[in-house]
Length: 322
Image (cartoon, rainbow, N blue to C red; front, side):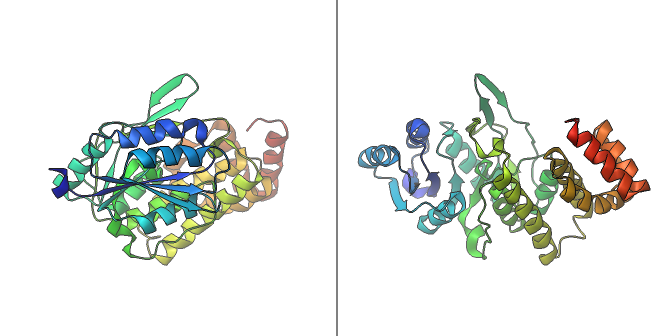
C-alpha cells in the first residue's frame, strides 16, 4: 500500500549529538508511515555519532548517510536537500524527537488539502518541564498571510514545524552563514513561495531546550547572527516588493527586534534603530501595548530628544533594569 503513496524525505543534520541521537533516529525509523527516506547529514562530528548512524543504517535501508566536513547547520540542511527525492520534506534536529504518527498525520493533511505547507504545534522540553507550544489553528491561508502571523508573534519561525513540498526549492533559495536565526531565512522564503498553508492541531515534535542550545547562548556571535538575519529579512522583503503589503507587520517586527537589542545591551545599535521605531509607533500606536513600562519611558524620551532617550537607555542598562 505504501508503495503508491508519496515518498517523504526526513532530513536530520547531525553534529556532536551522540547523547541524543539514538532517541532521535529511533523516533524516525519507528514512524507509523513507512515510505520514508531518512537523510542523515553527519556534519563533521568528532564524537560517537558516526557509529550510531552506522548502526541504524545497517538495520534500516531507508537511511541514507551523508558525511561531510563541519560547515554548520545551514549547509548541512542544504546538503540534505540535494540528496532528497521525496515529494515532501520534514526537517528534524538531531537532539529532538518526532512523534510516532507525525509523518502520517502531516502527509494525510497535505494530500487531502493539496497544501504546500502543513504547520503543527510541538512540545517544549526544558529540564523536567514539558509544555505545549501555542496552537495556532486555522483552515487555510496563503504563505504571505502566515508570514504576517509569524511577524506578529502569533506563530513560530521553526522550520521543523513546517512539513512542506520539496518543489518549493525550485527557485533559488538564499542562505546566510549563521547559526542563530537560520530558520527565519529559510521559513520566510518557503512561505513566500507557498500558495496554500494549512494546520493540524496535533503536536509533532518533542523540542528539547538545553543551556548549551544556540537560542540560549546570547553571546557576540549570536548577536552578529541576529543582526545579519534582521538586515537580510528587511532587504529580502524589499527585493520581493512585499514591504508595502507587510508594512504593519514589519513595524511589529522592528519593535520586537529593537527591544531585543535593548535587552542585549547593544545601546548604540538600539539608539540607531530608535528613530525608525518612533516613526512606526506614530503610524501604529496600538503597537505600544507590546512594550514594557520602562521601554515606553525610553521611547517617550526619544520622541522629545535623541540625546535624552540615549541617556535614559544608558541609565537603565547600567542598572540592569531592562
